[in-house]
Amino acid sequence: ALSFPLLFHCLSSPAVLQYHQLRCPSRSLTSSGVPGKAGSNLLLYLIVGGAATGAGVYVYKTLQESKERYASRLARKTTRSQDESSASAPDTHPNVPSHVPFLLIGGGTAAFAAARSIRARDPGARVLIVSEDPALPYMRPPLSKELWFSDDPNVTETLRFKQWNGKERSIYFQPPSFYVPVQDLPSVENGGVAVLPGKKVVHMDVRGNTVKLSDGTQISYDKCLIATGGSPRNLPAIERAGKDVQKRLTLFRKIEDFRRLEKISREVKSITIIGGGFLGSELACALGRRARTRGLEVIQLFPENGNMGKVLPEYLSNWTTEKVRREGVNVLPNAVVKSVSVSGNRLVIKLKDGRKVETDHIVAAVGLEPNVELAKSAGLEVDSDFGGFRVNAELQARSNIWVAGDAACFYDIKLGRRRVEHHDHAVVSGRLAGENMTGAAKPYWHQSMFWSDLGPNVGYEAIGLVDSSLPTVGVFAKATAKDTPKSATEQSGTGIRSESETEAEASEVQISQSSSPVPHVPKQGEDYGKGVIFYLRDKVVVGIVLWNIFNRMPIARKIIKDGEEHEDLNEVAKLFNIHED
Image 1: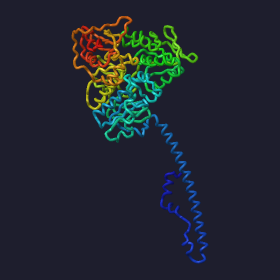
Image 2: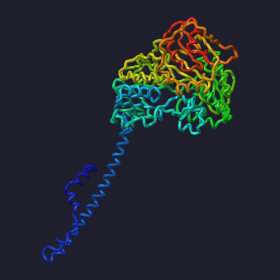
Image 3: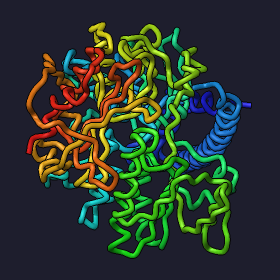
Image 4: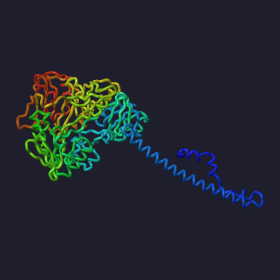
């Protein structure tokens, strides 16, 4: 059978084109010739013209039918080919460059810090951030802090908030105009940073310096950063509970989780937060504010003796628990979840000691699991003790591959191997990885800090190993109106306090006897206004919590870096001026 392309070629030949150009005889033809034969000539022309028209219709009809049959066969063939090759053949996204000099996997704080660092050292660099999150890079701390205290009814849409110092800012690091369109990244003058949102890297070919996305798109790179962060853990008891319980569960981590929980808090009568750590306690205080104004019941339960029980010494943990209760939260310590079920329209949480808690919605804030799925295809080592990708002192996992943020298990030259899940560490490690991706070859020397606020009036900053299982020495004094997170942000000008703290370190720490008042540990019932808690290992300070003391982190960092034994920690505490009014 004659195929459609061949038929089209024949119809395009000069002979056929000339055939189509036959037209009705002109007047000069019909008026010429031998007299008496005009009628015969006319009849001849009419016969030829009719034959031409009929042939043209036949050819046109045949052409259309052949074209339709060809299109149908082509469609069937294409569909069959796609079905056969979809498992292996990459479907290259038309807007994604096939190669980028700098590829950053993950769209969080660490990736953004790395991008900014790369561009600072190489102003013409072309950086592509591939983010599973549909949003542009943003800071996470306000999701459990300031956003909840906003009076703006549209805060879930604007994602703008007032810091404790009253200044307004956006949760996003940069507006959309800061970024280069993905399709323009290879050609834009002076390079830039592009974000490919809503895409997940599912495979890494380390030898070939390529990655594959979930849609099959392949991208090659020169240098790659893994900053995949982590995913919220769930409780086994909830995982076993079934879909009806899962529908009423929030694992709090992203912007959409904040939006969903904020909406839920306006619709239900009771919310239970499981977890007594940083996130659980912050959310409890935030929702507790609504408990007073809207009649919302807020319950917080956890297995420890008190809030922040894994971090703070027992006496301070107990005080913190009472502080959270004063915020309108029903706190249930020593509570281990046995099972969760649905009864009528409510959730029933059964505890191992026999107690039952009825609620409408559950927020599980029980830790983070580092995202290390790429380890298998990339052949990267995952730390068996701390989790996360094991990296060297320069945050390098393999040649041309670095890791930063929550997913990095790094070696701390003072405190040993660690994995840290805080904003400041994401900033610092991301920045260092970016520098090393551009040839700096710098080791990780910095001691990152972290902070937690239980509202605008109580907060703390910490550095090093802060583990309540370690011996501690706490030195406290009476607080003043200046000793609050709100006052601290007024002085520093930023609500993300680590932005003003990350690089600072005291040049020298002199500890000497003085006549200054000696701070003391408050007695039972006294208020822990402000103070310093030292965490010791082999008589050496390895961690420090500054309780309602702000802008003193450079001193704490220096003390840990020196790694010396101190006979009298009361004298060390005086370095933080906690006895000043």
